[in-house]
Length: 258
Image 1: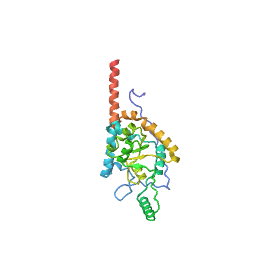
Image 2: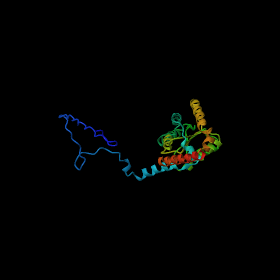
Image 3: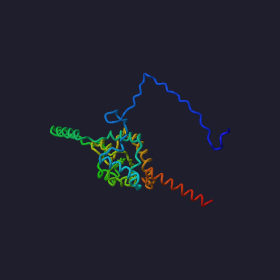
Image 4: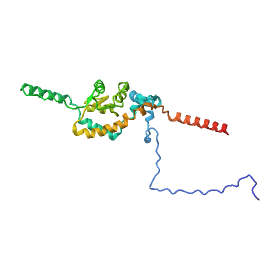
């Protein structure tokens, strides 16, 4: 007799395939209870209570991404590229000012020479100038040939006006990464800005190349940087929500058109 419509025919019984167990390898399942096997390592980063300093750093970084940043402050995110910065720092190291020990030694030699009645050489060495007030004075007097500004000065208001002053006085300026890196050149912990007033004859060719590249990156692009706002980058959830909202609006607009 044929099976009724709508009723499934009984499925053929599947043959159970017996697994061949190797007697050499005994199965020993791990027990993760108290006193048992150690559980596998997990990434517990989310559950770590980080120090207050680290928490503030991370929150500040996210806040800087979310908030809209005016162009005057946003220009400090556009720093000198790595290769050019390396060449610039090599040149600056050649004009490193003397440290305390070298100064003490020089003064002792001068004192000894004066005591012996010899003439002391009073030629001023060519060195990197530092100190915000000193650099500002040199720029205003049009004595500065190159100004290097750190991108991470805190508070930023200390140097936020410096690029505008350099452009007004037609002095090449560069924004580089790291106030600590600038500080090492002048034997300090940090330095907000450095300045070169002149270079030796043997370095003039190299210096002119660096200045031309810096002018093209900063002085010539000042008007472009002056109009560009920064920040305003929302989180992944907010971005997804905005995309979904845009899709709905586009769908509604298409329906109205049809």
